[in-house]
Image (tube, rainbow, N blue to C red; front, side):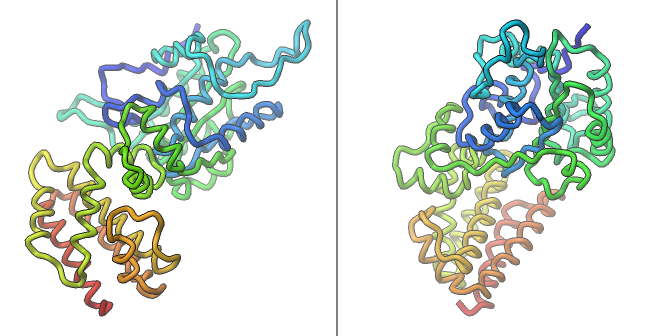
Length: 386
């Protein structure tokens, strides 16, 4: 008997899916992670495959797509049977699996009995309907039921956790027990955006598989593969790559919410620091108010943080190339001409980021919060005598 623990219900929201873009299980092509794929394939072909993998890197660079690609591959590969009458089978040269393969079709449909997915759950009650804020221990109890069933056919079983960063302490300890005594023919794939925050005992029991931010070419290809339209203008494509820092998820949000235009407006607003154009500041902040402006507020905070981070890096390493907006390089070089000012901007970025998160958590007035952040940036520039 075999379970169907993946249990994907297409009509329900999914915590590991970005907006209306395809879920990673539907993505057949992996962009920009050839080195990570090669490392996993080499371990598989060596015959000494680790039972747990921690797939790390910034959010939105293809870690989940890689994990689903690995899951399809592992479940579709026959277990070692001693070679049979015809000797050892040829070693696979890629993780790709034919979309028409039964395993690939079952995974796409959410009915693969040898795959267990752990992620934050969508709950309808009590109202309002929402995602749980963490992967809790109740979710990890499903692992016991999953392992209680015999594997469907003669195949490996895979547990995929997206993301392990979202587990609470009880869930993390439950997963740690599985890592310490893994069931036979089972591989765990743990996705992490911030591995330093994990229990050291979890990290130590996993093979680390790092993924890198995407190059501009890979990012552009991945965006088109997701059904998005990256800018036709090469200057804007370069700016999109710079601001997204190689993250497809971030780039999609920038495209959807006109992030390049907003970043250019921020650069123009801060061009004459410490002098700040008050009407322009209030106009920028006003666009972050109202029920339908939550995404605009979050994007504005993110791009202010990005601008400050790029300012700090300029003081240490020189102006970034390429520019992400007209006049950016000159502004950053003026704000951070040395490492002393670079440290000051980095500290301010951390302070303002924490303030924005705290303000959002208690539903402070978004326009007032954005105005306050801009004024504090102006005050900081004045204190540095720029």
